[in-house]
Amino acid sequence: MLPHALPFSGVPSIGLDMTADFAPLLIGTWVILGICVLALAFAIGLHDTREAQRKGKHTAVEPTALPKAA
Image (cartoon, rainbow, N blue to C red; front, side):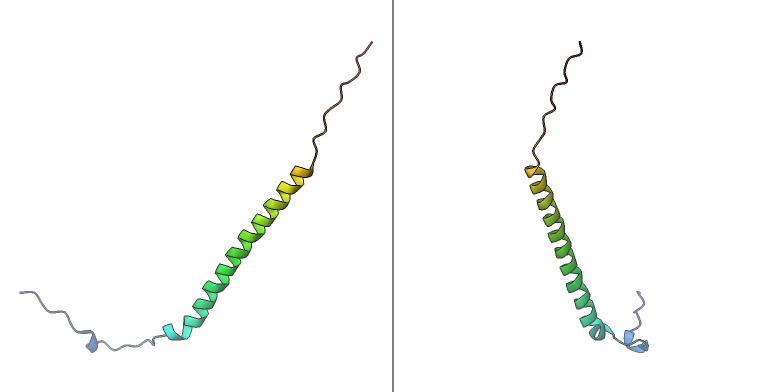
């Protein structure tokens, strides 16, 4: 025969359920983290766009031929 497990009602619950208390804090943390990730992606895209535009405006200077020595 298999012994039966003890029911959990016999074990006293010492801790409190703090899930409801910390829910606004955790949701706020995730929202702020998401906004920061989007802001970082926007800043990287803006930086890359400006770098590409600056490199596109830069004209290549062709070197001139040096005079031949006598």
